[in-house]
Length: 116
Image (tube, rainbow, N blue to C red; front, side):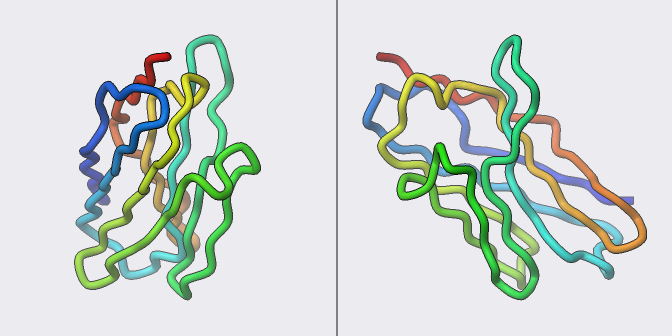
């Protein structure tokens, strides 16, 4: 099995910054990508940012230039640095890992609230 432990959410004023972390453990031998998704009340879960084991990254248009995803492969940890936060970034943020032939695993979610 795979375990994901997220941390770093909280309450911040608009324009502020937060850094999310997600540590993965367990059977990760076929890990191909890690990423972050978010879900705001009444909305569908959406991809925020992703990073492959090769280091390629992709971002949702709404966060480009403000958020940065990175990965410490030795620690199997993925980070999301969020700058210039806006009230519309308020959501529960979920860590995701994709394993080849084994599918996706999700963290428990961490709340990010941006006040105006």
